[in-house]
Image 1 (tube, one colour):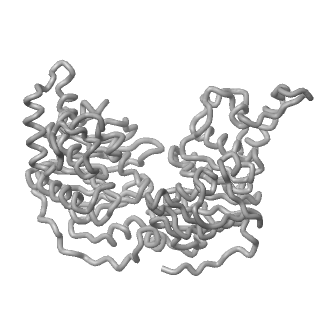
Image 2 (cartoon, helix red, strand yellow):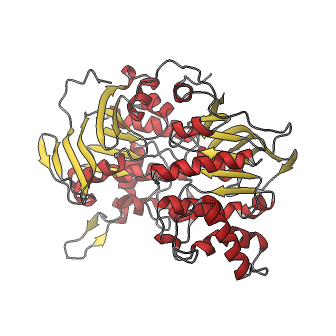
Image 3 (tube, helix red, strand yellow):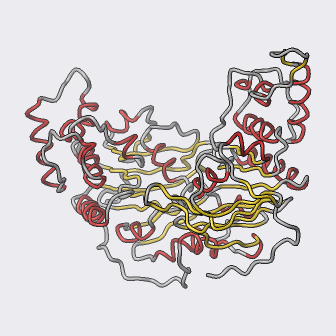
Length: 513
């Protein structure tokens, strides 16, 4: 898809061309370009792994570029650190508020660059100037608060604006906002957008990184898309409709939806859903969602990164507390206060982050497989070694886990075999519903194939499966029914036999008003 945009007539305040970055021999950015103009909000878009974070780190001096050129206000620059980038006028506000909650608002705004008074070396901080300057910077982002109060006493939305005010305190010409809305509710997002528009109108160039398409179209003036570490194109937002944006991000055009015969036989489902969620949601994380999963059914949960898939899984499994809606198991209302209660009800969750939340790398394959069952039985009912061995050997054989021994540290196994061991851990608890959050991420094609086949076999044996994946092709292949999320809300359902294009069209569809 070729980009044929119309561009502002003014010169760019910042221009990146031919940017390349390698880690060892592995290229992560290749021939990337980015143009920012004064007085614009520029959305930087791309799927997970597209290179957005790496490009920002190159731009702000965290990583040196291997190739390419950066020009700021007509002069070549080579930022060597975030502090150097700030001195040049490039400030970044990250997704997680990176301030000190135990300091006052004013101290956070000026930390590391306090105004001082006196002539001698080591002169004292001018606290009156600190407080006055903080109030002035906060006024630019529409805040009128007590700057002497601790930052921790204010909500996250206020802290986010304090971060922006701090970033403006270095005479920023370019402001990078990396996922600034991820922890904000709808009202807080609207207020942030008002601030962004005000700063844009003052002449600031703003880079806006987000996974929420509705926010891109609500506030941005132009869009640059990256895919697999490469520049795809640059468009005025008004000239790039949502289906075309998704096409640019995923790497292929959305054809007209064509029905396909179901690749899977109809699920053997019961009349009463094993799990039913009605209006289940959490403020600022997930809009109320309705969901049903029956025994013997694979329900796919599809959506782009940031759509709310993992958030829904965590609510179902008791890792987070819902503040709206009801969860039903076998027709009985439930409120899980912890994963332990969810496990007792027959639920299991294979988490998205295998290395940090899934495996315990130093423990053996046998010990990792036994972990969930041991937690279910409690510390006073230790699983005998012989039972652990039988259980581990059974699942190693059943799932085809390639390991020299069940006592091999799991950290030495390939990613695909680690993932199989995590699935084995939960199968050992004999769950009735298995929630798989990105079970094939970061593993080779052969291992993906094996895991997908195992999912189908589990459903065929009567287990309910909620299958979450950012790879739409996988969801389409295994799911008997597909629930589609976008911007932390459910936007529809599709039956077995739906195509990838059907899913993307639903993601890109205009929201109902």
